[in-house]
Length: 479
Ligand SMILES: Cc1cc2nc3c(=O)[nH]c(=O)nc-3n(C[C@H](O)[C@H](O)[C@H](O)COP(=O)(O)O)c2cc1C
Ligand SMILES: [Mn+2]
Image (cartoon, rainbow, N blue to C red):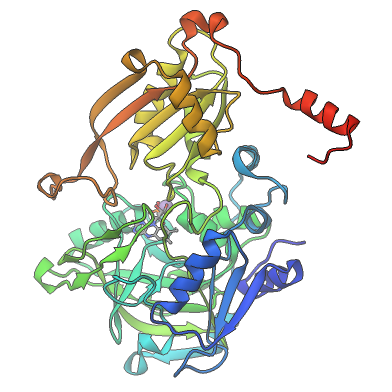
């Protein structure tokens, strides 16, 4: 199968693979969210919702599009049957071949089939779920791409930030501090100018993967997506903003984020987030986009990617763990055999596990210290565990078994205070939620067999895989 160059081709692929279910008439208030959660928990098919009450038939929402390794492997150009740590390893190998593939500039394109001008804009004309029970409103942007240009560097950025409808023509875009879109915004507002912004709500799958991935600041997400899908992303110049917009997109909003005072900014949230909790609403903090024009294809398909309680997720594997794996190696930690996260967003998250083949005294502690401080591990980290390489780190039972049986508590557990934290971290006490940013502590758990007496450590009471296979074959037992 050729990589899909737009959402519709991807839909066709999903149909051919038997990996999509269709629903008509589901309620946008919670029901879309419930079905997405239910089928996501089972690592089930993608879901395509159509015929919403009060909306034209054909205005669709797709969710769980990338829920399984198989579907995501298709988009990321990985072996279709790779799973678990092998999926991350395959991704690492592919990433090493990354070469930016510049966009093709085009005039027009499918996204221009319809145009809605300023006076007619009503964002609620697009089906927009209230995804979770306690969400503060309908979120139009979850699987979206927010396109901005930094006025200082001139660099284009594409990032996924949640978008809540506020008014007919206004939507909050929650660009967190430090994110590339946010930096462009700050640079623009510092000059007293509004930031031109374009938002794509459904697009080629590779562009979404690229948009949500923490690629380095010098990498253009469009060029990354082009490389991923093996062909340049066609972009057209947005007439109002001058920004490159995906010509094969489903819906694109054009507008700007004006420099407003905190008292002019509305309430945003709460929103059910990826650690599995609702984040509190804030008032006067989240940037507000004024939408001035909308382009959309006939019968548009909006990509929904609501965060859910782990292990449910919009992705099948913690891609951020692959980045941490890379950084551990670059920092000189030898023989890292795998990195995994059990509670993850774009980063490996607050429960990270590393497997190593121990080579010297202190090797395991070195892996823990680097992981706790490396860029890809530090943000939103909490528990970092290191285990021997006989442990399947994507299997929580195996990891718990290793901690329970191999960790020598007095020597194997350390606490590091005051490390970079995610705004989504639920356990930061209210009085420590400083406006200048949050920090939290790390627990480093060495669950490797203690190196000093490795040879004497009790042997594992389980047969080697090869021997099991041999006996099973002899006795005709299927394994
Ligand atoms: C469904 C989804 C929702 C996200 N929501 C936000 C958000 O509201 N704010 C944010 O800063 N990052 C959010 N992210 C994470 C960013 O997309 C991610 O950090 C990305 O690398 C940001 O791009 P940038 O590095 O170019 O800023 C979300 C990711 C996904 C997949
Ligand atoms: Mn970026």
